[in-house]
Length: 50
Ligand SMILES: [Zn+2]
Image (cartoon, rainbow, N blue to C red; front, side):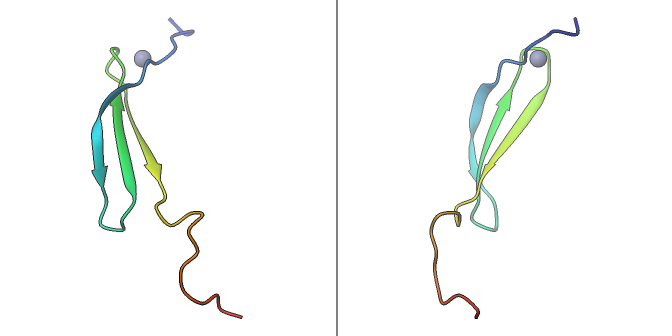
């Protein structure tokens, strides 16, 4: 133990109310992970306040 490296097995994807893509994954040890992909990043939309 201690040096356990989590293996992130993908459990599926979902989309939050804010439009963010969320990836759910789980390790065999029981640990769970969520990874959020910001749908807005790199996609400038609308006028920038200046
Ligand atoms: Zn683990």
